[in-house]
Structure formats: structure tokens, C-alpha cells
Image 1 (tube, one colour):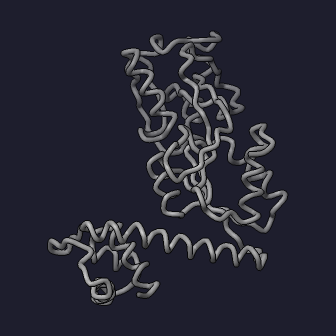
Image 2 (tube, helix red, strand yellow):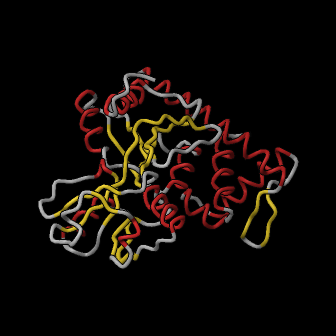
Length: 292
């Protein structure tokens, strides 16, 4: 059995389509098919149920997939340990975020101590982020809501109340506090469903029988305040995302349950390089935690 066979098998199992898998791997379909066929011959059992070009893992395939993922994970850990031992300066820290309002300050603080480390950051939904962690595609995730699943370490780092942002000339701008029921009929801007803050707001609104009218839904939370300032709509956003806009006013929300927890997540058992460990310490320090 070859390492290449395991890597190819993992991609085919995820995509469940030989043509798409070949395209993702940048190999010919015939070459990929031969590799998978040799793997099945080595094991002595088929791993997929085949319907045309579409494939589905069978029971043997699902069992083998779990073991193959673990084997590839251990090899990746070994590679990272060796690389860390050699103190290479081109290390890249990969991050996923659903709660990224504090990320610029965190990255700035970390870069001051480790200027040679590069970053790759993705804004993801909670589901996408969980999958990225499980597949070892990211080192850490900053998430709201927290993810409590087997195999993922979850450390709550901050409790972040939600607030309402309105244009300075809005009828509510002079108030200190407002309830959701008072906001029906207003236009709102927000992130799409699947992001923690939006899902929390929707859940609380549903429990109160309140329906908010969204005229904009996006995946860039930093854009919301600019839209509020332009008078496009109101926004419910975390306190940590509060920006310095002269023509935007902020109000507290009466509903106590409109507060999110921010968590730092990483995969249990994953090897953390010295840079990754330092990044974790920077995050904890930023939110007022000294250590694990």
C-alpha cells in the first residue's frame, strides 16, 4: 500500500465523483481510477458502490476511510514536528474564523513577536470551520458559537454582548436601550445564515415571535457598519465589532440572551509548533487569560 493511494482515496471519498476528484488532484481520470483499483485489489474488497461516475463509500470504505484519515493525520503531524525542529522561517499559520472582529489586533500582536510567520485566514460558517478542523486544514479557529464535539478542544475566551447599530439621525439614536419587538418594520443588514451571530439573533427572534426584514445579507461583517452609516439598514453586531463611525449610534439590547461566547478551537491531538503555541498564548492574553 502506497501513501499516494491513501491521498487519492481520501479525495475520491470526499468528492464521490471520479472526474471531479481527478480535476482536484490534477491527474488524469484513468490514472486515478487505476490507483483506486490497485488499492482495492491490495485490500481484497471494493471500497465504493458505483453508479455511473458517481461513487459512494460502502461499509468497508467507511471503515478504511477512518483509518486512512488517521494515518495521513499522523504523517502530517510528523512532518510539522520535523519542520518545526529545523526552525524554518517560512511557516504558515492557517486560521478559520466565524468571530473575526478582534482578529486584526491579535494578528498584529502576534506578528510583532513572530514576524517570519505567514498567515492564511478564511471566514467560514460554523459547519465549514468544523470540517476544516476535522480535516486538519487549519491550525486554529476563532468561533462563535463554540463548537463542542469529540476531537475538538474548545476554550471559551470571551463573552461578547450584541448591540444595535443605527444611523445617527435614526429615531432610536438617542436611546440607550431597545428591545427586539421595537425593531419590527425596520430594514436590517447582516451576515448570512450559518454565521454564529446571525443564527443567535434568528433563534432569539423566533422565540419572541419577531421577524426582522433583511435587505442585505453578506459574508463580510466589517462591511455592515459602512452600510449602516449609509442609511441602508440597521445592524445587530457584537460589541467587539463596534467601530468608530461618527454618524453611527449604538444601543444596548434588552434581551439578555443576545450575547455570544467566543471560543478558540483546535483539533485534539494535533501537533502545535512553537509558533502555533505562541499564537494560542497571544489569543488568550488578548482576551485577558494568562494560560490554559
